[in-house]
Amino acid sequence: MTMTKKVNIIALGMGALFGFLMSRAGATTYDFHAQMFLFQDFQLMEVIVTAVVVAMMGVFTLKYFRINAVVTKTPVDFVKKPYQQGLVLGAMLFGIGWGMTAACPGTIPAMIAEGKIGAIFTFVGLLLGTMAYGVLQTYMHHEHPKN
Amino acid sequence: MEITIWSGWFAGIAIGLFVTLHFWLLGKPAGCSTGYGNLCGLVCKRVKFFRMGEYTDLNNSKLWFLIGIPLGGLISALTSVDSWHLSFDMGMYEAVLPQTYSAKAIWLIFGGMLLGFGARLAGACTTGHALVGGAMLNPASLLAGAVFFCSALITTHLLFGF
Image (tube, rainbow over all chains, first blue to last red; front, top):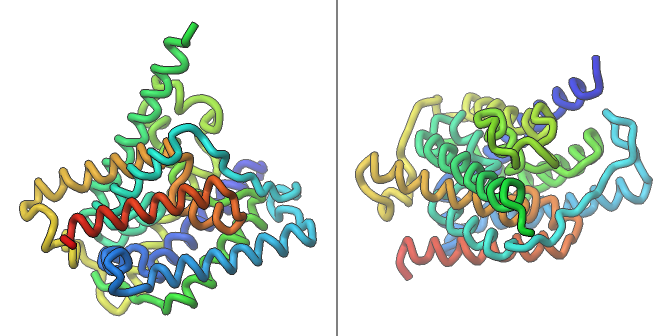
């Protein structure tokens, strides 16, 4: 089996695990989002805070023992997303979308599989929004470069 | 439908371990929103942005991770107490969202567009920035995560009325 195939199969399994955990955590349940932002229930807050703390310890452990990645046998790449122009504006738009749909990109596919019809429309919107960004980038930077 | 929910701290520990496991197995951070660009590239071959950079090879782990998510959601739904069924009910949001099906659909598509466009403009979504970026204490991710949260908080308060 090629490395790409091996990586993709593991990624598929990890995606399934992620979807299952998002669902069990309550992140695919609409009301938990509203209740968190309205300060009525802190299920999701508890989830994210605990998750970040545990993940931090996990990352520290992997770094400390310089553990190699199991599948690729290469050192783990703890690459950080850079600060990019438009980050704050993008994050604001994202937050409005989050408030409007009670979902985020990672939970929507799981919500569709749970039978939530609303998530299908959010999914379509997500593709359109991502596509709009790509079209804008293609048009602005690649076909009409600034001279 | 009613999904069986774990207590917050337990689910949090599981997700924290998941983030660590993802690093350990695949050697790179977990993320969700980038994979939507893979889908865009497969649907529309003419947009160069989805054919270059991190999208040079579309058949990659980001795509397969995204395909895996519904499998997990389905397993969770099938192992919940409530039986699987289709539903357009959005709980508390029913009281504040448009009442007709078509208007609700348009509302959700518009919200989804903001999620998709905003995630690309910010570079990642709740998973990549708030969860994984937060775990690495990446300043850009902490900023993005804080803005995600504040913006969604204000939006939700405007929706439900102060």
